[in-house]
Image 1 (spheres, rainbow, N blue to C red):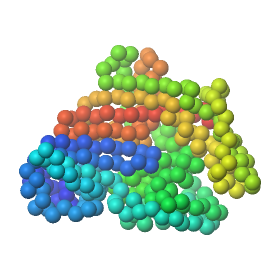
Image 2: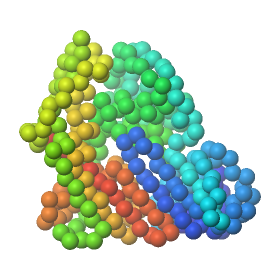
Image 3: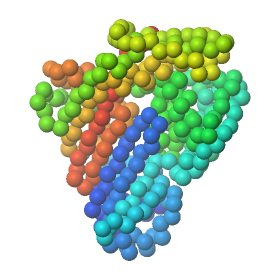
Image 4: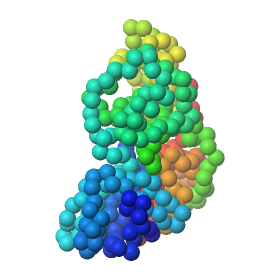
Length: 305
């Protein structure tokens, strides 16, 4: 494992006793927790908020992480770094008048001192009017992306907007085989948590989407989303239903350190159990000291129309 601080490899200058990286999606930000002994060696670097840290291990990189907190605990120093800098926590009111989603993403990223990119999302989608209600820039962008059936992923100094259906359509990065009694595996299915459909109704437009795999679920009517035409209302209903129903089925798998396990990566599960099929990684916890990985996945949904 190599620990970089402000671009300098300081692995040999500090005694790392704990290093856990949590790689996540869906509007949350990645984080890294490090525990160090001999804090004096660390403080030689005069750490400041938003200083950049990065860890490499076995072909895996955490990407740029920004120093957030330093806490003394029981003779050790605990360091928390996140994939969003402190500027991302600044809350504000704002109005966005006739702007494309790509331009809103650029504006939110620039406010945080970051770049932006869209994956599987039409850049020219335009909103006649959107209001930011005392939200941080990434939180506001994440809320909009849910309408579009997408998630926000902050990685390596960039705000990435990723369409869930785009990620689900990718070729599986790995195939994992699990048995019915395999240790370190947890499968959860909650069919009662699924909605059969969502309808968006406003004074200007209405639109709806249904999930063919949830015929007995409830139908939800939303009247507080500012859709201005039928196409937008239907698209938003589709996106919100996808974001909601995909959380009803999850699979957690623990394994030896696996550098290929990253958030929003497609995985195929081969199993004689109900867990078999296509999955999308929602979050991964890598323990670099113990050499383990634990991935939480959400079932790919292809039944919403």
